[in-house]
Length: 478
Image (tube, rainbow, N blue to C red; front, side, top):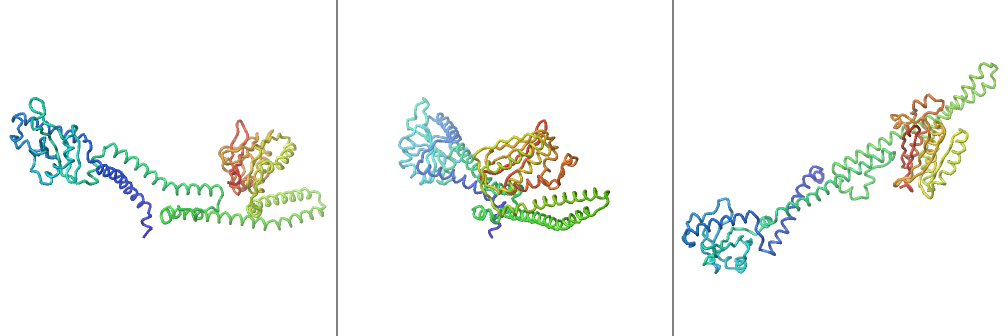
């Protein structure tokens, strides 16, 4: 029974009617209270116009009959058929003299009340709201000389009126109704948009986290202790969240299967390759043919390189499990990078390159140490491989992230290839043409290490040449 009520379409439709009712109530209640505490209100423009027209008609008719209302033509008593008001003339003693229609006793009783007396003493036309009637006026009739008529005649217009919310609303200025409707509709629309945007933003955040490598993130698990879980429990958004979690679970299982298969293949290949290496070593020792020795040495070298590639692939598939066993630790930036920078400086001298470093002091990071150092070291070694004269490592704090920026003055990478650099086994055309070796796993391992530390990795070409790699780590593992 609750599921249809929580349908998104029903919610939007219900929200529209709720906004309408709240707007109507917000106008009606103050108007009704105002009418209860103050029976006298100013006339609206259309009422002033109607009163002015009727005064002019009766005034012109009285001028032709010596200002005697008893001689007034019955046809002059008729009001405009589109007007809701009738009219009557009262004298200075508050007694009705003439009316456009026969008057009921209830109206005669009301004319004798104190409220009507105060109403008739007013010099400015206004509206008086009573229990069953509304009166507008009074307007004094003039004699032919321009003075107030000798009988003190005053024109009053009246109509039956129940003192309801709708009649009270008619007395509220139009600008105030429009203002209240605008404010309430904007507020209610904002609440509706916010209620829709919250789950959409949650879904956006989930895509961002899974896209950055947090494959174990699940929306419904994250919502268990939050009121939003109850609010959107049985509607389209909940089903959307379930589908997202199912998709993320399948992606995680697929990647884990690939890693497990890669680890199994690497493990199975290590044993025959080790045997092959031993066989080649024995064959080279016993070989008497000098022509075969270079071939055996080449086979040993290729076998050793293949072993290194398998070890690199094993490191990629087992990086996460090793990191989780050790756990996260807190380091200062100097202590984390001190030994790495010292090794990089020594290696730079062996490559006849210049090494520059600038570390921000007193910055703490909570992360998996081995993956973080592996990522930084792989980027630095990759920079040494292609740099022409210098490599630099600097750190900076941007918002809630610590960025480690590694740059080189090498040839750079084609813009179309930047987004493929972290793909396993991917090598640029320049790397394929060089004799640098490798399978294209160094940057893939760096990207995997950054994922484990909830970090980011970005690549950009420098002008006129060179490559910049930015590794972003959250401050204290936030």
